[in-house]
Length: 137
Image (cartoon, rainbow, N blue to C red; front, side, top):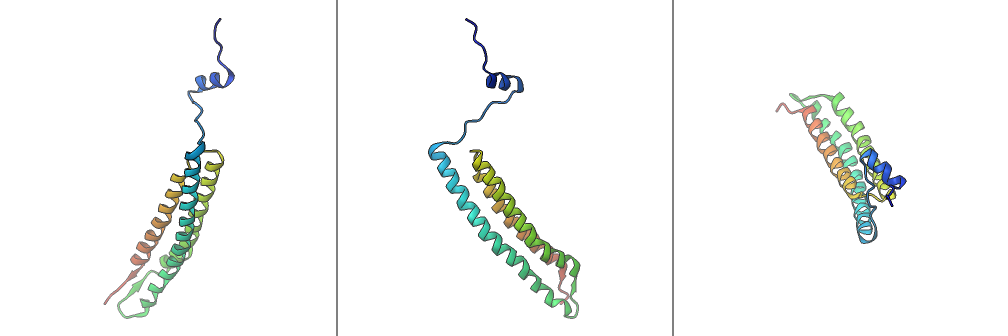
């Protein structure tokens, strides 16, 4: 008796894609706990980074000193857009992580990437503000 492929197997063999096994049991619980923990840390870090970027504007108080030059346009853009970028990064990492958790896919790498991106945004803002203020003395 010839064996016939069922509909899902036939579709997988024609497209070259195989179905992934969803996370179950202990691996799913560990992934969910790790994802939630990292997203909580990323959210707290995001709040701290956003306030830190706002406080970078204090560097522009030295612009009135003789010999100092400041690019206040660049500084203003960084100070106002930085917290928005941080909020978008945190929100995007939360949304993508939740979607992956709902679909029973590994989600903790997305959360870790979001945390790293929040830190990278802070250091980028720090470098931009530092380049906007030139001390002449």
